[in-house]
Length: 522
Image (cartoon, rainbow, N blue to C red; front, side):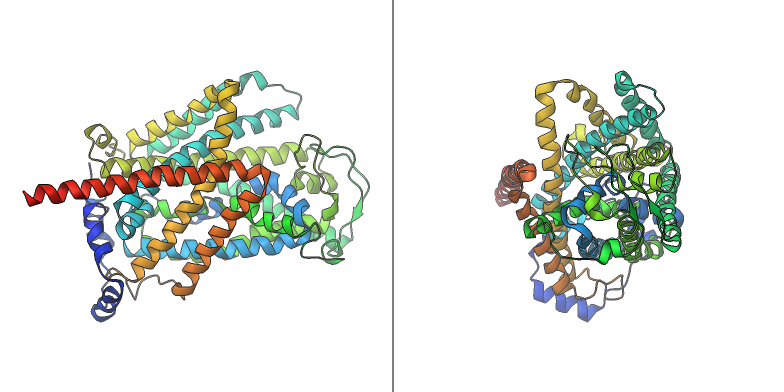
């Protein structure tokens, strides 16, 4: 078991107690030199098996989820072409988050998770809150992803007339066991799997953009067509950029819908910070991490903005309508169907299965590392057993326990009364991540004011302003959750969790400190 490599816990309170201005002067006067990765890795039992290409594609995969392939129709319908500006704006905020995480991870790349910096700079109470909250979020999100994988799998085979609905539980079990084994073998095997998962997703998006360019060049016109997953018949149109620019309005469906589009896009970007969990297992992290973070904006422009422009150039945004069951058709299926690909639905759902499997694979990896870290920081002997690595240099016990927790998903979905409550908790988990992001930005501010600050590191520019811009944005996004009936329940549940568990962590830490002082006094 590796103890002490996080530089958190009781040692973290010393940094927090230092006066901010004095620490800043100290950092500037000493010009702290960058410690070598080898010296920081003395307490890191993990294997640095992730290569540059693994990390780059993990970062790309983290920005591309199933929401782009299936959910972008809803976001386009909500506010039209201005959704492009929303994706760019929210992407810039998420870039600030990644720069903050990147700077802290660069200073100490032996850390298994960016959550450790919350402990180090905001105190053990907030670190405990963030650590357990984030792990629970990963488990709940994993449960929803394993359900999504089986649903998409059934839909994919349904396009060929094969009914697998009665086998959903077996599909979920097989996917979960397979991906857990991928994580248990070695970290390089996980990286290789993510490399190919991302490659498949990228290929479809590039294919969409190329298809749009060719159709634009030809001035392609298509007739009214029936599209799988869309009620009725979709009107025909001519492929043109005028489908985007003609009659452009910032809020064509009202300012409330425009405001709500920000939360929808934010959730599409959620868990983009996953690359920050891989640093302690990355070869040459101080070279690879800045590149992965800095190229984030280019990825957003290509994979999100590029795809949305291509979609709306082919399909006029007013052609996106809500179905009777509340769902929206996939823009990707529409585009490839118009291009003459009769098996477009099968192609898209194959890629969607890949995207969901990639997300589940990453969630198992991240949940295992976070539980491993929680076990190392725990004073419980039972928990500490999870803070060990296997002969293959992976936290096998923590991965298996996390996988078993996700395995409860099929059982929960089979119980009607429990299933409804689970949906609420799962949606609340997405809202709670906002608190983690806010704490991360506040921890970054403390880092910049501390003696740990490296002036010659991977420095985030204009941090005094950028940190507060990001915090303000996350607060606004959370407030918007109260404005929609779909997200009101998750917003309230998230606040209850913050007050209840956050309050418990703060009180527990206060009582522990009081008892420690009393013991020392004796």
